[in-house]
Length: 447
Image (cartoon, rainbow, N blue to C red; front, top):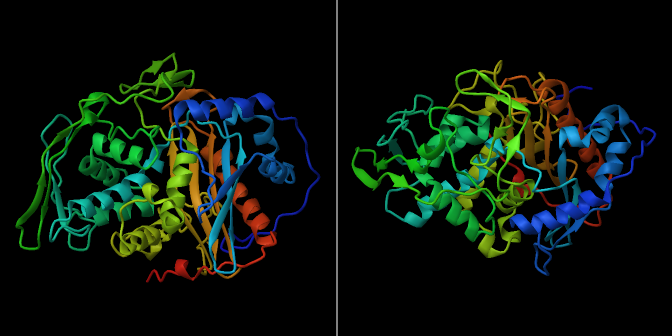
């Protein structure tokens, strides 16, 4: 199979059946209410959506036992969760959604890792809009000061065309290559309390984004976020935000959370007990799936769930969610390290080939840490009129030791997500639709 070809054909295979546990479904229904995890809501408006646990995803995977039999047999080990959203349009191109689930369980903790970069990107743009200060935009020079332990002072960005750090450039790096330092600067601009308040208002009360991606900043140090100042082109101060401190210790909606059988601590020592993740970031798959859907289709979402963004803001996010690293001039990414498939786990995975043609684009955010591998994507093929949303997570840590760097990403994780993306694409490509979508709004010129 040539990886540069965005159209995939997989052979039909004999089905391999297994009996799912009814208790798993019941447990999910109970736990989703308990944690307050945002769910898709039925309504009569354009956001009309329905959940289905008809077993469709399982049936599709069963058609390809050579790809998924190990995953299907070992759900307890791999902790797979999948959300597949069909998108249908009427004669006026108005949207409706139908959601299909596989083992979705918000009480089954997974570490979201870089998935949190998407809501933080949107919130950073929203915060600038709400400040509504003349001359303050996402492109304005943003200098980060230090005022507490582990905080860093950042006054230049060598990857920017003019070496000027800005909200726009940090978001660009986060969405293009999942840059962790960029995320930390945006987290510091937002602060714990603002993130929690805003996401709760948008009906994501269970989301917890409570730390930087900086091993030097642990525990309560993350409740203190740096002073941040914005300057115009003449280095005149436009706005200064003092250091923020969230005095409320964020709880975890799941209570005490521990993973693995042991872990490597900050000194490199093996600790023979599960790693405590209680005060790490938390976001269930349904919430990140809905946040992505809100950013892709803001007009199809109830107003209270939308981000306060301009059309230009939305276009900015879509551009860098879907762009390949090679299409960026600033920063310039070396193709040997940042392949076209970088951060495109669904469909392309870790392919080494250059992706040619721009008919198919993936607007996504991914996560990879502690053995958890996740992707949340809107997949769009303009030529073949294919569109759908797919979100999935898998846990690949056979030895049970967390933070030892020994995970089965390459052998199990990436192949699973790549294969899942391909079979779901083929299913959608062959699915009969009454009206084909007009996808012209997703035709982006990257160069």
